[in-house]
Length: 350
Image (spheres, rainbow, N blue to C red):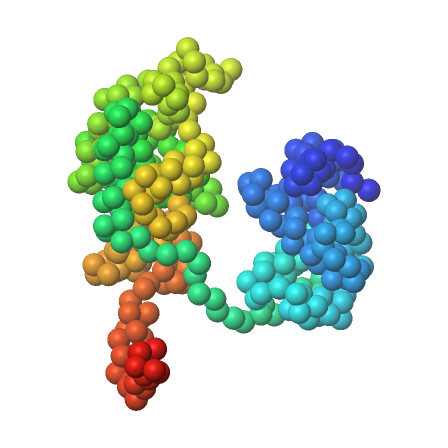
C-alpha cells in the first residue's frame, strides 16, 4: 500500500523518499520520470486505464486508486481489452500515451519480481493505435512578429521593452521552448559568437542554439541594462520598471549571489500582453517553435539540421512542422474547377 507521501494535494507530485517506494510498480515508474509535468501526465494516463478496467468515469478515479491498482494481475487478454476500451474514449495519441504508461508499469512489475518475464512480455505485446492529426496552433507571419517587436519598442520603460524584445527574438530565431528559455543562465550566452547553451532541454538533453542579427543585438542591449551578475539571463522587472536587484531577488542558500529569473508562466503572460498591444491574433508560445521550424525549412535548411536546432529527438517530429506539403496541396486544389455561379434573388446577388 502506498504511503500518503506519494501524492500531493493535486494528486500529481511524488515523494522522493525511497522508503515509500516499496514494491509498488506504478510508484516506481512515476518516480523514474524526470519532471513533475511528466509525472502528472502519466498519472492521469494510469487513472484513465483504471477507469476503463473498472467501468467508471476517470473523474471517479483518484491517484491513490491508480497507485494501488493490482497491475501485476493483468494478462494479455486484459491489456488487449484495455486497448479496445481506450480507443472508444480517447484519440489515438492519447491511447498510445496510455499504452506506453501501461507497458512501463508492467515492466516495473517484472523488475520488482511481481511478474515473470514471459507473462510480462505477453501482457506488453499490444500494438499502438495508428492515426494522424493536424498540429494545433498556427504559424506567425513576419508582419506579426514585427508588430510584436514594435510593441516592445514603444514601451515607455526601456528595461521591460528591451527584455521582452530579446525574449521574443530567442523564442523565434532560436526555437527554444519557454521552459528552456526561463532556465538560461547569463553564463550560457556567449556575446561573441551568439551561442546559447541550452542545458535543460526536454528529456534532459543539451544543445547549442545561436542568436544572430536582431536577436543578438537585442540580447546585448538587455545585458547592458541587466548587468553581468551571475544568475538567470532574463530577470523579473517590478511594476515600476526597475530590474529586480540582488537585494530584492530571492536568493538560493547554496548560491546566494545568483539572481533568480523569470518563470515560464511569466513568458506566457508577457506574450499575451504584447499580442494585445500589437493587435496580433491569439497565439501560443509554442507557435514560435512551429514558425521557427517552418521558416527554416522554407528557406532550404535541411531537415536534419533543423531537427538538431529544435532539439527534437526524432526527425519525424520536425517533419510534422513542415508546412510545404500543405502549400502544395492548396495549389493542387486550385486546379479543380467547380461550375457554380452566384444566384440572383429579387434583383440582389446572394
